[in-house]
Image 1: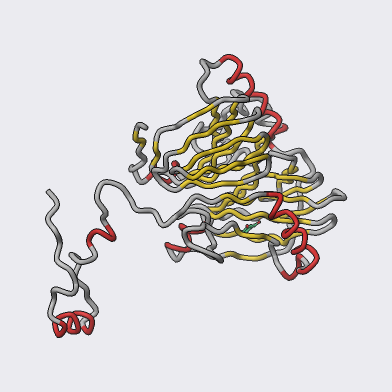
Image 2 (image 1 turned 60 degrees about the vertical axis):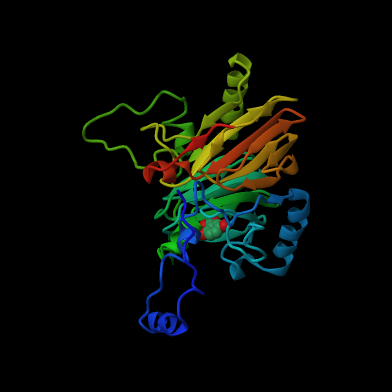
Length: 345
Ligand code: GTQ
């Protein structure tokens, strides 16, 4: 049932000119660009960003550009499909690698997009969100939700590097992206909520009518616990991929409105071929080595690398060592827009 649609060239030139003059355009020659048959035609191409290649370039940025001149000293991972300079890894996901040197601070600001940090290396880094000091240890996942003040600091004595994931491309597309700057925040003198109120999964502060839980009650997800939980899942599972979603400990919902985070464990030699998904995704390797084939393109990854998969990609993982990955995706957004979809392989 797909009739061949008329082209622009079939229309008389004076008619086309009159349309342009009037600020209008015919839909039918463009119809399949905006509504392709059966599945989207993503501009995004699979990307692979090797840490061993980016790390020296990021450290060089530390020499070339003082943090005061950068506000945030970040190298952005550009989608190969959009080319050099692209400020996004997929249509909805921005990924950056951020460097903070000992003693440096990155000033407080808040912005409409939400951000998440996954710590790649270094000790002593921290992020302050709304006055709460969130220590950043390797593999930790730290939220800075849209609209929340945040600044970064560093008490240690070696470079600290983390991965930033933001829903920035959406906000840019919506013409809704902006930031407000301020002084460094005063820090509350207590451990973050992951070490106090939400120390144990399944336990939350006693509910009282007068006390409304915070919208983002826990903003740091210590890697140590994630890894322990994944190991037990893998040990007692039925051989399926062990996966855990990061959720809000009060509501069980996704941690942020648009971006979702899923920690994965693959045992040595394990293969996994998830269904094709309508989400785009970025995979960050916390530990391990393996190969993932994305729409026929093989990515040989190792610890601290990052790679991406476009929407509806055929993704086949094969871990050559025991491996832990964090899958960054936009399922929460697609659930909210009610179009998330999986197609069997
Ligand atoms: O650390 O607040 O990679 O505002 C891009 C924008 C990091 C941050 C990024 C930001 C930040």
